[in-house]
Image (cartoon, rainbow, N blue to C red; front, side, top):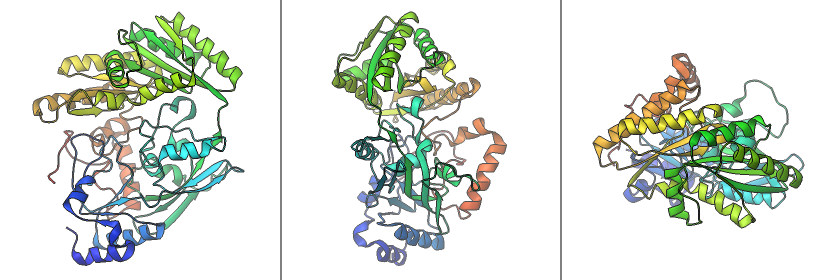
Length: 470
């Protein structure tokens, strides 16, 4: 518990109106979008500036109080659950777009800016910020940076890390560092910017970011290809890439996911096929028209039973929106929905989907699969019920097998969701003991008191998801 005298120090820094300490207020920030993981913070603080963050960190350092930086809590790895109690930092006041620099094609923002708000703001100037996590309507840039979020456009444009040029961050000792900047080239020393991206708030607290922008694509087209077997869909993916075309979006949905999405969105999606590919291309009108025609032909030649190109922008947007709603759609099926993100080389997509189905049958659980086929990032999703302990044990065993199979196929345990708590027990499977030792050494150097988001990435907890008493 945090004493009254220490609370008085925090109040002096940010004002009483920016402190939340009631049971109800703390309960709101005891969980994130990860099912079945919860722990109460001792206090929730909303700083208004970098200096206030520094002052808060200094108090926490002196008193050895854990600090959990938090965006909108949309992450799926329990990355922002305050497992050790302490202070949750909210950035609702630090939510401004500070500068759009059209000369250098950059935008500088505070961590609390909503991703979609940023995208829309720069598009009004004819510019483009490509990272588009499915949660972009609510997720924040600070959260995207901490988790190195991906999105539907990741195949062509990359992930958050590819657009972070510079950061301002507060270290565990209260010092402010600035990394990178607006430079197109900068190899002065270690790449601290990229070290902090994806570090899940365990190494520093991001207080400002300079992001790369690109010109907004002139046009785009969207199409839907339907398949009676998964192999044909996977073959289409490989052939499109082999033809040296990189679509902006190349998404996969299996039949159970498709059924759930159609029940949710009611836009007329077919539900009697084994798999669908949602493909979008953007660029100049000539390139888009050429590529879409070629990709449609490849899909047909590879066994698609139907290929339909969206006739209007509204129809295209409806298809993309429906795909973004996959998690919401699946969440309606059962009280608990566990969504993961095993990633494999794109050539192994069909083998991975088959393995997921076999693993689901082995453990007698329902798993629906969708994801970013173009970059091999699949989202096996299990509708279940956390109240059924026996079923939950089978679900956890199934996901352990899925992660193991992904690694065997040359993949990884997470492509965009992060490690947090729930993936921590599997991290060594991917990086090895030497890799874990290097990461722990970095953590120890930057946060010797272990106050920044403790219990994440390196937790020694059991693989079972746990509910911590509130």
